[in-house]
Image (cartoon, rainbow, N blue to C red; front, side):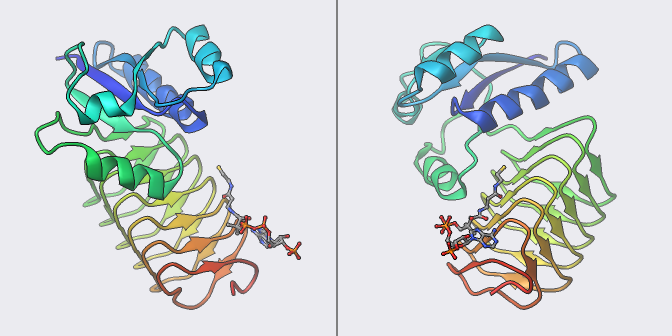
Length: 216
Ligand SMILES: CC(C)(COP(=O)(O)OP(=O)(O)OC[C@H]1O[C@@H](n2cnc3c(N)ncnc32)[C@H](O)[C@@H]1OP(=O)(O)O)[C@@H](O)C(=O)NCCC(=O)NCCS
């Protein structure tokens, strides 16, 4: 069955997500059909660049919240890079709405026993080791690496080339900056932000922004 998909967001990560969907469709023709994107205020640039790849703006996110989408669809994905914005949208989507799709690029590697919950997007080149749990609406960007037994909460963003070592516990809505490293066994509290290129050597409290080497 072809999954008719609605993509939430019209920005850069939406286009990265469309690339994941295109790769899945190339690998298994007929698996996905993108109906279009939803965005409350898409820029003319975003609309134009999406049109170039044949993707239309179907309406606003509000339309989804209120059940006003006219086209029937089977699943949605929230393709917005900011973890808090993503979580806020997920919170407002009615329970009765169609499920969120988990989209895993065919060139990502997933270890044995790893669980990806609904709404997960995993980009090309990501390597996720064994027995990892990736929470709903979490994004793993290109070339990021997640070690064995790590647990990523809801709506986490693991930015490109970040390294999450084994048995790390990452709370909901955390942003791990590009090329950051979190050493093994640590806990990153909910809503924390780890700056690009940081090396985290101690637990990070919830909501804290840390950067640098060692991260402070
Ligand atoms: C850490 C971060 C969240 C801070 O954002 P911010 O609060 O807006 O910080 P600012 O840009 O105002 O910079 C504040 C100070 O921190 C420094 N700084 C910013 N990011 C830094 C980083 N990653 N590492 C070290 N220092 C950093 C700035 O140089 C500035 O220093 P100064 O006060 O001496 O001039 C952000 O810079 C970051 O790294 N985000 C992740 C970005 C990422 O992953 N991008 C890839 C997207 S795909």
